[in-house]
Image 1 (tube, helix red, strand yellow):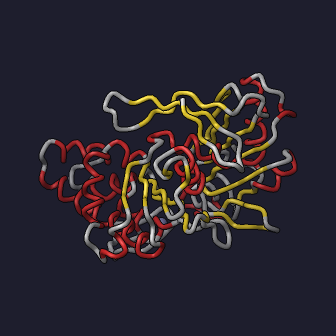
Image 2 (cartoon, helix red, strand yellow):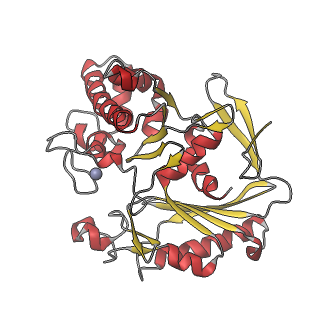
Image 3 (cartoon, rainbow, N blue to C red):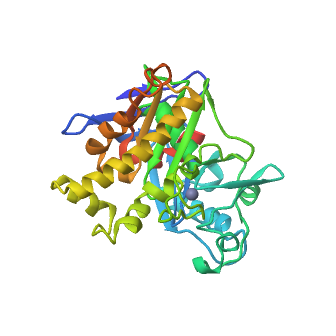
Amino acid sequence: MITVGTDARPDISVEHTMHSDQTQPRIDAFTLPAGSAPVACVDIGGTKVAVNIVDDLGIRGKVAEPTATSGAPDALAQQIIRLIGQSCAAAGVAQASLTRVGVSSCGPFVLRDGLVELAAPNICGGLAGKARGLPNDWQTALLEAPLRAAFAQVRVENDGIGALEAERRWGALQQGGAPLAHCAYVTWSTGIGTGLCVDGRVLRGKNGNAGHAGHIFVSDNLDALCGCGNVGDVEGLVAGNALARRFAAAGYPSAAMLFEAAYAGDTRAEAIIDEVCRVMGRMLYSLIATLDLQRISVGGSVYWHHRDYLLPRLRAAVRGKLAPLTDGCEIVSAGLGERVGDFGALALVA
Ligand SMILES: [Zn+2]
């Protein structure tokens, strides 16, 4: 059992148990300090909303549902309020005893009167257009205002920022228990997202959207249509669903099958993954060149399942380029492994 904490925050206990391969810690037990009031952790994705309660007994009462996309524009917020009630009931915690609600959400955000609303094309039918088939015409989904009407303390952040904070406190973006000052977390999953920190400050930007680096343009490929509507951005080229869409015709109908083929020595699949790593490597290089980072941790399901294959390729794509910038920056696997997302909302309120 190790204890992690800073002067400004209560100590948090995290138990690290080594996997059989001895490469990554596994978080088996997580508790707030004895006597801590419970907090609610909310994770909003394009397909699923998950809520759990965390207190001095651990992480409890997990409930999840498909993300609400029909009804009034506050349907998602009302769903979250209801799920928090259900999570409290499942955990045996009185809802009135909740002190804080942390929300880690997919973006982008827009601010109305300083409060976050979601403007995510995979949730808001008014943005995506009829072709997307969403059963609503929302321009935004209300989020922070209804939650603040229901709970005293609410913190909403982009999920890249939640994951970054989790990695800085409990994962690979800390050194000797202190969070790194110049670092980034990158998720390579169904989508591509980042959380960024420079000079010890987590970057947010005018609407809390800093870190949407998956949507920077890197090519003119016409086969790389991103869910955001861009053609040729990083996410449209290398995200998990982009790989499936782009290379199905070549005989690789899913990212998993593309990697299987490469592992089996299929040189065509190897070449595709090499090219994909060059694109992702360029994004990492661009982050380093722009922000002067000392470490980047990478997670997300595509990366995590194939990290032994991908990490050396990503490092090679960056190594030697403008050495004064890149020499001092390490690229590593996420310290929290597959559970980075689980800890993102918690890092906002714990
Ligand atoms: Zn995009």
